[in-house]
Each structure stands twice: as structure tokens, then as C-alpha cells.
Length: 390
Image (cartoon, rainbow, N blue to C red; front, side, top):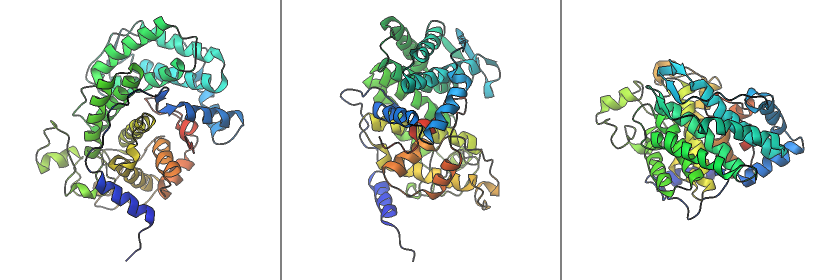
């Protein structure tokens, strides 16, 4: 019999100990900046880029050369953003997502350079949208709100707690936009494919931190702790994946249909694996991002079943993304690859900080550096999280 490493045994024990949710209540006082990146992480990034160290310098150069960090960018706000299935129609959808990512990119550029032009451009983009948008409509409205709503508070946290030139009036308008246009749409969650609810909850968690809204943070985290086990399978779940309360998935046939027709389950399989790796990557990114924000706010979900599910899922999908033969028992032997730039945050947390060996995930992560953006809500993770010990 193969001898299991101490790390493997430890992780297995943790997965058994933390089958049930741990306390994820909001802290007595939120840490700021505290959405996806902390001050210590940002200071580490700034030091590495300033020193010309790799891979951070090339990742920073990649960001700065992108349209998202352009000082000549002109925002394109709309009062009503209409997004249908697969963004058809696309009335302001791409513009909104890209402007939100631009605000985040410019905020990162400001923090690294301390060049106030970047902060002012980020604020100009925020002002344009906070003074215009009122709602999202059509079938993809919840998803669109989650995508853009995940990026806005990252930008806001960096600017609010490192740049003194952001006026109280502008912050107030931004806060009102986040609460009325975004939080109200995402806080209720979704019973659609899991990547929808996960990014909606990512947005809700980030916005709650920016607003210092403990009640919304607690509600979003409780939903997140239900959703993760319903998105990534572990053998300890039993013969079938878990489901979320109110999902209506109350029979074996319904569950298998929801899991894209997959009827055999293995550690790390995700609800959308047999759909395609791209959408699965969205879900894994949001799991990583929420866990990272939670850690900054004082609760380490990486050492719970969330971390074990994330480790298994990253490993399984990295394996096939790297070219491993696909067994007939997995999605009929055919996979649609394309995981995307989504592995850095989870890999850094589990490998760099916790010391867990993740060979396939490491190979894929390092091969893809510098990780760019998926133009939706994931951006510049090599810059912010590669080998970041903080």
C-alpha cells in the first residue's frame, strides 16, 4: 500500500473535521484595504516591482501596457445595462465590466507608483458610473452584476485607504451605487449554474467589506459556505454531490442533469467540469477570491473543507489542462479545456502559505505566468498573488 505523506494526511483530517461550516461571521471591525488584497500584500507587490523582481515586474508591465491601465481611457457609463444570454444583447455589458477592471488596474498602478494620475483616472471612471447607472436588465443581469460588482470594491478599497484625494462626496456616491445597484441584485444568490452564484457572492462579500456592512457580509458568507460543497465534489460527500437549500435538486436524476450529465463523481470534480473548463474556472476563481477576502478579514477558510475542495479541483483541472488522457468515465472522455488565468490566488494560499504540494497546479500556474485577465472579473493575479507570503 502506498504511504501517504504527512501533508496528505493532514489535509484529509481537516476535510473530515470541517465538513460542517465554521464560523464565518464578520469581524468586529473590517480590515481595510481588505477585498482580495491586503495592505501587506500590496506593499509586497510594490517592493517586488520596484526592485525589478520577477515574475512581478513582467506582470506589472503587462497590466500597465493593457487598455485597462491607460491614462487616456474614456469611461462609457450607461443608466441601464442590458445583458441577455451570452451578452446578447450587449448594451453596455462589456463597457461596464472593462471600466470596473480598469478602475482596479489603475488603483493597482497608483499603489505601485504613487503617481496620482492613476488614482485620479480610477476615480474619474468610478464617478462616471456612480453618477449614471441605475440598474441591470435582461436574463444575464445577475451574472453581469456579479462580474462588475466583484471588481469595483477591489478598486474602491485600494483608493479609499491609500489615496487622500478621493473626496467624501465621491465615496458616498460610489457607496450608494454599490448598495443600490449591485448589492441588492447579488445578495439573494442564484440557482443557476454554480459560477453565477459564486461570483454574485464574491461581489456581495467585497461590497459588504467596502460598506462595513456586517449583516450583508454574514448573509453572503453563509450562502457561500452552502454553495462551495454544491460546486466541488469530495468523496466524503457520499455517492452524490451536495445541493444548496432551495435548489429543487431533490432526486438523483435532477442532480446528475445539473452536473451536466455526469453520473460518477471523483474528488475535485466541479458542477460545470463537463460543460467546459472556462466556466468552471470562473467558479474556482470566485471560491479562491472569497476565501482570500475571508482570510484577510480574520477567518481562514483555506484550512477548512473549502480549501480541500479548492485544492482537489485545481489539481484535477490542471491535470487535464496540461494534457493528461481523459478517461471515458469523465465527461464521456471528452473535455472542453480553457481554464483561464484563475489559479494564482488559490495556489498561493494553499502552496506558498500552507506548504501543500500541488504539482499539476504549480506547473500550470508557472506556465501561464504572467496571468492576465479574463476581461470579466479576474485580473493580474500573478502581480498580486504570485509567491506572496502575506
